[in-house]
Amino acid sequence: ASTSIDRLEGKEFQIIAHKGASGLAPENTMAAFQKALDLGVDQIELDVRHTKDEEIIVFHDQRLDRVARDTLGNPVTGDVHDYTLEEIKQFDVGSWYDSHYSDQRIPTLKEVLDFINGQVTVLIEIKHMDHPHYDDFAEKLVEVVMSEDDGESWIILQSYEPEYLDIVHELDSLIQTKALIIGEDSAPLIAFYVETRIHMGRAKESNRMKAINPQWETLSPRRVFQMHAKGYQVHAYPVNTREDMIKMLNAGVDGIITDYPNVAIQLRNEI
Ligand code: G3P
Ligand code: CA
Image (cartoon, rainbow, N blue to C red; front, side):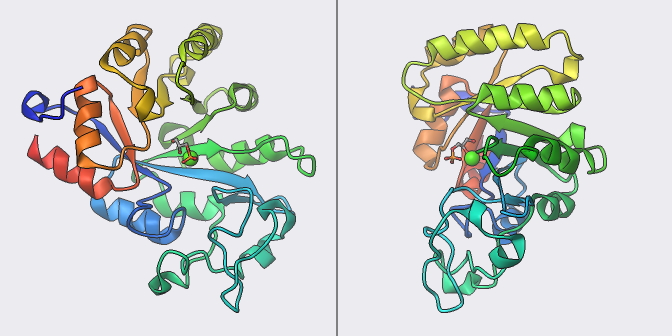
């Protein structure tokens, strides 16, 4: 697709901060969420997992060592699911990015949702739901989301695992869901989601799966056209350079999921 902005004048698109503004502050921390809000994004994406004592936390990896440091500054070993919330709150998840952020801790989902409080849409990615130590993860997730004021209007759940979305939908049909697609040839998956949409069509209009968020490298103008023709909005991820953002917008996407929402905001201001 074209890398010129000539045809983009006035184009409206969603700007979605991936793990908060994760190119500008440590991912999935309050600092990254604050930065995204300050920039004026439309949506904030984050990932959820759970602690050993069944608290839902905002964290991307299964393992802690990439971003978590102990009080001595050493990487923390093991899986996030094997520590209690109290233990997890000791870990510094900011220093790996920059020593300035050494006060950043892994937030609970509740802390983040209370903080954002409907100012922007929140896109929650369910990484893991079937951990053997936690059968009630879906129930707890739905409870946390629906305990927010008007939660169903500004919180959306997404996953690569369609059955996770079905489970959530069965627990509370008001919750909005969105599919993630990975892989070069997504045609069979698109067919699957179309069927899911028909299935979900039995529920209220607001509950239908309205968007697909594919990896941007898999998208072409033709593929975006096909998804639009099937009734989906298309949000590409992770689009991190101005050139790639322009390419995706020219391909017709409705939104950009990015680590650098500052670049997307700048682009929006120019077109
Ligand atoms: O929104 C899509 C994207 O967040 C999925 O990939 O690994 O960054 O969570 P990942
Ligand atoms: Ca994610």
